Image 1 (cartoon, rainbow over the protein chains, first blue to last red):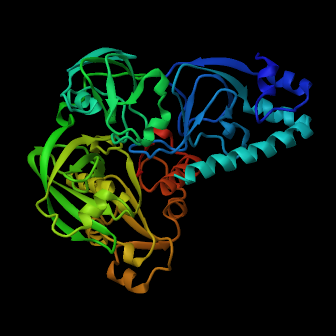
Image 2 (image 1 turned 60 degrees about the vertical axis):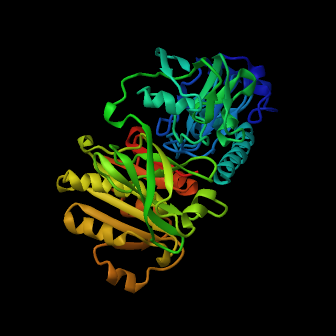
Image 3 (image 1 turned 90 degrees about the horizontal axis):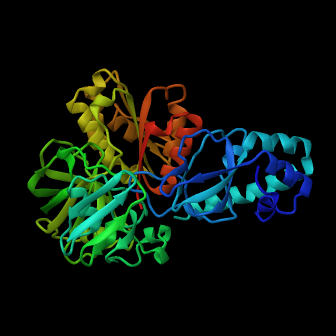
Length: 144
Length: 347
């Protein structure tokens, strides 16, 4: 379980009813990852959404041999790993690596989607914000 | 100078020359220091200076966006030590690199510069001593009068090669490509560091091979195919090559690719995809062994490989948008695991 207040300050979940935030916090957990380790890699199953509580994550849409300076930094308070909310996209198309020791909140995608099936208004708000995030991430990658 | 590296797998020490890049010195001692581009753009070789002092030789390196300067972090591939120093690297490091392919410095001379298309050149570098490398690897070339090194994948493949072959696409405002495209560079001296890179092919892999290349990304694929030919790999394994360019005037190496198809007619398929124009009938007639299609290369690959992705290892190389599109296709449609995808995204 995590603190509902941590979700309140994020772009994705702010303004959701407190009851909804408490439910999400109730089925989420906390995870600590060391500097240099991956949160996930290209091709991994996309099960969880992540909220970065502390640290710094490098998020790259396909990092490999001789990559360019593409990708972006995830800073505390930001959400990433949104593929877990796309039912038709169950695998990671990016790599997320800790640039320093990081603490993350782990939010199971399937449970979040099940919650939004019941709380459709909250689901609509979150998915609309998710669409904006996806467009921003893809635009950033294509601009390099 | 003595460099001490604190890694997740232990502490290692190596000697570094006065004016030598920290990464290059460590790699030539056989240490598996983390890196990808080796030229300051990707940020993978990030390290923290915890003792002594090191200075960035390229203060505007794009990879610095991943570095925390407040914590004294540097990019090892573009930093030099000011005396003995200690680095902390957030990765496991070993000192068991295959000695055959430990990178090193060589001198070379540009040779055989020839036009492949209106904006693509082929050229060779005659080395002062042979280099053994894996198919798919690259080297960093530096020329007098051109600031900084540039990474190029080898087109050829030979153990103990005394010449390395490359292709270069003219890049607007690119100092190194402008220099190569200038007249009379034949014979010009270049410094060579390598071999570098892990997106490599080895015949021991035992899987069918899929190559997806955009433009000059075909370079490393040609090395992979040359290695496969030498090992008669495509006698028992399938090879699928997809080469994307914009128009007919951008195609090159179709003669070489045709020869490879002729050598392995049952198992090797090559498709050239033109993204901007229909395929001229004359091009099909000129190269009957090559299949042609229209569209972006990753879309053509998905269409033509449908149902045939199982058991392949994929190699992808080219400009970033093309590589990103191919990677998404390989992960989401082809369902390849990340471990079977090797890519080279040109910055």
